[in-house]
Amino acid sequence: MTKRINCEVREGRFIDGCVTLEEMVANHTPGFSSTRGIAYWQLTNMVTHKPSRSYYGVKTKEHPKGFLFNFCPFCGTQIDAPFNKDDES
Image 1 (cartoon, rainbow, N blue to C red):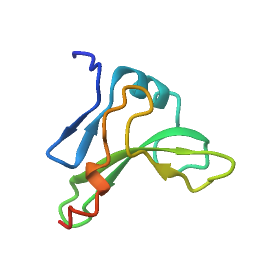
Image 2: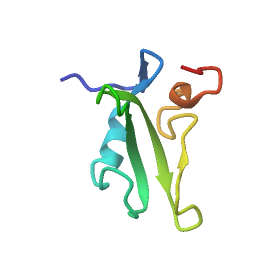
Image 3: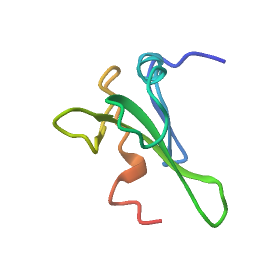
Image 4: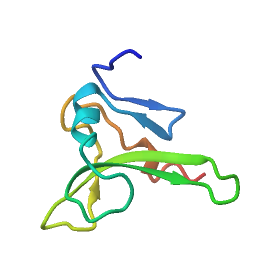
């Protein structure tokens, strides 16, 4: 597996994080937990049972429900394609 220097958006819906972003998520509990820190979320289509999109975000004391990243805080790549309003599918 090659390590990415910059984040990549696949098919306009899935984010492959850069090395630093993935390392920061590695210590975080997956899913919608109450753990604070950087998280990776993946939504699943309940009809097809396949992943429909993925995104990164962070939960803090001030924002316990979390918020999504428009860009990677480490490499600066724009990663808001999975939840951009232009994509209505």
